[in-house]
Image (cartoon, rainbow, N blue to C red; front, side, top):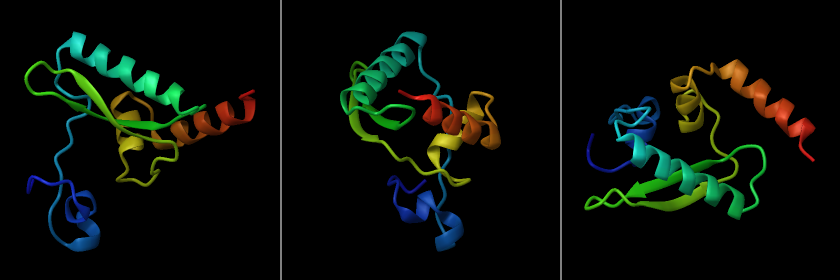
Length: 109
């Protein structure tokens, strides 16, 4: 809300101020969503991530070209973390997400 995704906007319950409005899934054209997903998957694989990661992507304003900012191979798993929020938007509750990560991790070869 302040223009920066800082600690007060990411964790308003800790700081007593700020807050962030999340739009998940993002309101993007289908072709942009597919391009972001493709770049995120390439980045996930490029760093050798296996079961899961969170890939942060920026879109160039002029043409919506995706640029990978970072790959987080151990993303947060708190109630306010982005991975559980994304899973919830895909219809996956927190407990199911945790079980999927555990099962996939145990079976990964």
